[in-house]
Image 1 (cartoon, helix red, strand yellow):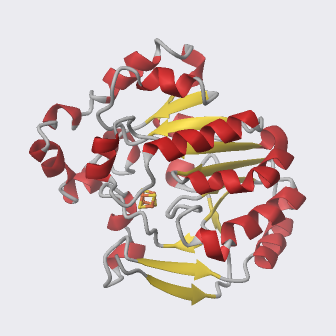
Image 2 (cartoon, protein in one colour; image 1 turned 180 degrees about the vertical axis):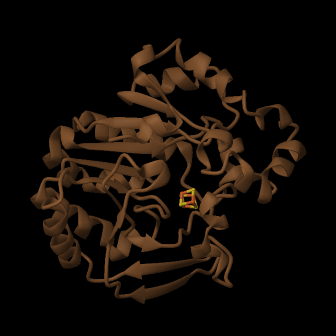
Image 3 (cartoon, helix red, strand yellow; image 1 turned 45 degrees about the horizontal axis):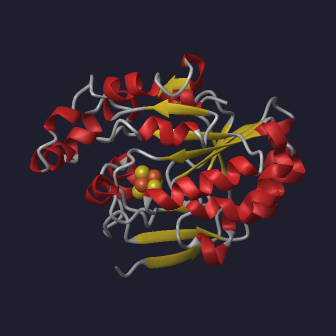
Length: 272
Ligand code: SF4
């Protein structure tokens, strides 16, 4: 698929942590738009996507010259209290364009020098393992949360055909873990998965977080409903998995592989 890439020079780079991210002082998005274009992505329903005529997933704005900007904003933020950062809330910081542009890497370099109180890196891309050299320098002040909604590649292809394969994400988690970087698997949103899934994850992550459309799309599931995601479940014969209680299937299975204090639910799992 052809993607439109536009280079922009933003005036600010940090956003205030609000709503689902109110536990954070700031959120940080190296890009606007996301080439992974997941079917259920709630950003599709937000102004950034609705006011754009191109379809979500087909365009990315690259935020240029942001490392210095971030440095200045961090210095200012520090005077107001703890600096806790969620990267990223409405884009994937390690989407394909990052291979060339390295915006995320340049922001990470600034963050490593700054020493924030906490940084959560939220991605579904194995490219995050490229930055292990930087992430290790942050010790326990960082956590990499890797979205892995299912262990079934066929399901992944139905819901997020533009996203990286599950095996590549698991491999990246292995590299991160071996490097001593705190890791989390974000089963978010919960998609149909196998009974073996929790055991696969237990070898790779310190903790897991389970979330679904009903708890985690910021509108009690209304945004997801508007996008017609239920139809996809129905066409696959998986309608029972589109239900407010479906997460419990995975949550209960996780208890066979993790202790209860390693299993988090929805917003709780993304807190600093
Ligand atoms: S990776 Fe995240 S931001 Fe990107 S399309 Fe998927 S859900 Fe949306």
